[in-house]
Amino acid sequence: MSTDLGIGIIGLHNHYHAFPMANYLKRGMPGLRLVAVADERADVGEQFAREYCGGNYHADYRDLLNRSDIDAVIVTSYTSIHADQVEAASEAGKAVLLDKPIATNLEDAARIVAASRRVKVMMAYLLRFLPVYRQAWEAVQEGAVGKLVSGFYSIRIPADFIKDSPNATTQGWYADVAKSGGGGFIDHGVHFTDFFRWFFASDAEDVVARIASLTYRQLPVEDYGIATYRLKSGAIATVESTWHAAEWYGPMASPDRCTLTGTEGEIELHYQKSPQLEIASRLRGRSYFDLQGEDRDLICYRNLLDEFGRCVLGDRPPTPSALDGYRALEMVLAAYESSRIGRAVSIPAEEPVGVS
Image 1 (tube, rainbow, N blue to C red):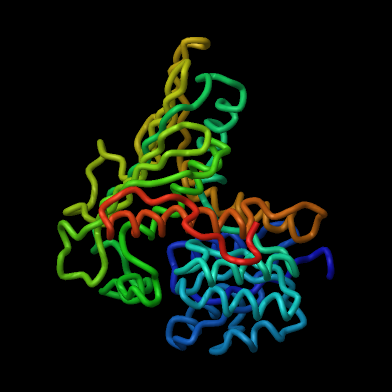
Image 2 (image 1 turned 135 degrees about the vertical axis):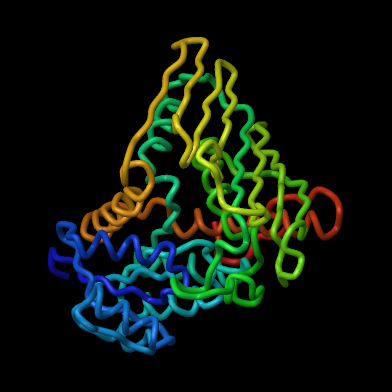
């Protein structure tokens, strides 16, 4: 492998992530070069290829994997095909940056964990690469708010914001449970379960959840979910992940917010609202942090790509890993089960063979 990492993108189905990463690669990132794209939808794939990778388009992702000028792939396809594509990439010797969720079920997630023992597989959990979230994590590590004892993470967006492709008018695969694994809860919920595992350095022990369709009842998937987890550390963490907002947002609202409570203070995080970060500490007083422009949010895609490049070209393990993706999905699927049966569910309910 050369020091210049040739990258292919497989699937543009989660265009919300594929296009921002392609934009950064097009603008230029040292050591990273976007070579080709694969998507079975010729109209979407060919237009993307002309804009971002010199017209190098493949309808079949296997043809992309056979290219000698590609060393690694970014997989942003619909969720149910992730395991097949990651296994094919591992057989071709290509490292993988994998979009969330890792899979729609734990069996496929276990296949991906197995593939990650052959090639490097890194999960694209964007929250870990937002500057203010990183600053908050570092404050927690330094003991600014003492020991974390509870957390609440919530997102509100309308289902009408979710589209199958940049020019689409419907949710498409996002609302097809066979391809997506669910609706408004799993869509962002896996970001937040990973967030809590990252911040609390603890896996979940059990969960109580309610998942339902509240606003967009015509959808075949849910638009609302809330789950409260008991972590092995003893902390309590709640995830509210939704598509049930009635409309887009005014300037005073934040669709993405988090409260972390520790024994010595609290942290408030907002993806969009200012200030993005507030730390109220009995030990340090109050502090605020805010960023402007792309450093506020889009920079996470550049930071993610930079870390992926360092992981593949250097001798460092993928973080977050495929196993992190498995654990985040495990927490979300347990919440669906809790809502279905109407009581708490232990995590893990059953450990698949080969996952540790």
